Amino acid sequence: MHTAATLPRSVDPLGAHDVEHREDFRRFVVEDAEPWHREQLGRLYQLWAQGNAAYFDGALVPPYILLTEPAGPRTYVDCGAVSGFGGRSQNRIRPSLLAGTHPHLRGQLDGRLRFVADVLLHETIHQWQQERSGQTEQAWHGHGPAFRDRANAIGRALGLAPVRTAKRRGSDRHLPSCAQWPHCVRPPDYYLGAYRPPLADPGDDHAEEHGPDAGAASGCATTLTPDEWRRVHSLVARRVSDGLGSDDAVEHQCWRRLLDRFEERAR
Ligand SMILES: [Zn+2]
Image 1: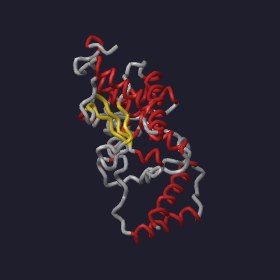
Image 2 (image 1 turned 120 degrees about the horizontal axis):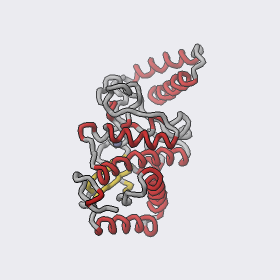
Image 3 (image 1 turned 180 degrees about the vertical axis):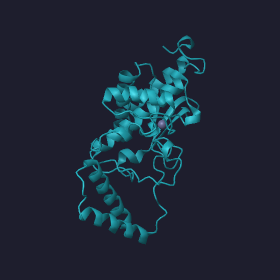
Image 4 (image 1 turned 90 degrees about the horizontal axis):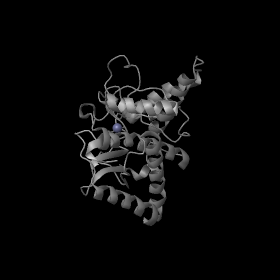
């Protein structure tokens, strides 16, 4: 399965010890880890295995999945080609996402788990790029045409709308970016109200390229003073209380989300 003959030349095939160690690591985690880690990581390994079977022909070897802070202070997760001890393929998932203390997630565990499952699925595409296809798409921060096509193939199976690459160009430029896939194309209620992403800052030129692994939390408009937040909050609240003047459910939802966010900020 992981012989040099079946892989592109740009991919260094996994050795037998690599595969054995990664499978041993998974086994230790799901059987012998401390209870909280065993439960959470056990669930994540199950989700990873389902994704590997359903969307990658079972061709991937379990990565090292760690509940620990990723490198970027604002990222949810990262997928490193090389682990902290020199093994291959390491996913670091921010523990607060599952603990319920992350500022972008709240509510019941069910909704948070759906979000983390999506984060993991996104990272599994990066693992595929690193270990199978070799198309790591550095110029796109990993979110180029190959990532887009794989995301859209999985998305079709999940009934999700298509996405474009992280660079807004070409005939699909009107679509959301695959850097935020699949969060950006999930129905609004899919996460059961648990996911509350920050508002994008229109001045952030790189917002397009931010994903769960590239600073998704960035772009929060922190440049307003508390007084300005209160003023904007009252404007939005007035707009909502005056009636929205439209039957568009998506527009209503946007206004209500805006109001929610400004209420948090204006406190
Ligand atoms: Zn990504």
